[in-house]
Image (cartoon, rainbow, N blue to C red):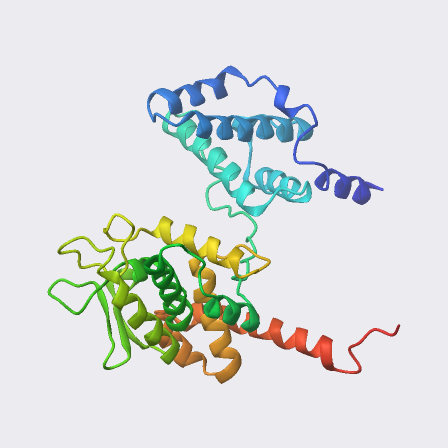
Length: 328
């Protein structure tokens, strides 16, 4: 019976239903005032910290623990209760950060001998898989001719999709491309060599191949670019005003194209980079080559696409294998 009671206590909700109405003790209000006045925390951050302290009061009250006498095993139990109550790992991490800060402040003022939260880590948050388009969806988007009254804008938007999906570029790398490899150019496309050169994360340069379809789209755009580009503008992709296209403008135009192409999902530039990597891995199985093309410093970053590849294979199996189909 004792064991069952202990398990029930751990599995209790993270805080009582009326936790929002808990009045904080003066010693906790003093710390919040310190954060507001001395640290100048934003109102939203203060509210999150206040919520964390209310949970602390609720949980310690359930265990009958005086806050300044709390030990690491108490905090571990409270953290377990938060997790059992359905709180996400990131939310628990924020709450632990607030508690840690409180005990650190008490320690600096000689009110506690140790910080019971020091060294404690929240549960690990699962890493979500990157979202990628299917091969059919990506091809449909790449082959879609944007319906725009301005043929120059249509050519530009089509070229953007071809380079994002055909070269696996980040949106920052794309908008950083210049016309030609002039002095100070962050990136450019060498049409004669069918190669794109970009300045990636950490100011690392990399080069990659440009496919036939992307080169054709680039030539069509370059034939129209002069109609939009301002005099002396070096950017490869420009807006209606003739200046370098921004990240947000690319995202907006890409969403528009995906809707026009009939894709059932919201598409953003990085999704095309994920699709590029996933589809390459599905076809080649060469993880090292995909790492090189993406410009990843560590292969562990690229390995996430093996999970996407496995998902694809699992779907193929479920759809095709006679022993995987459910009996009707």
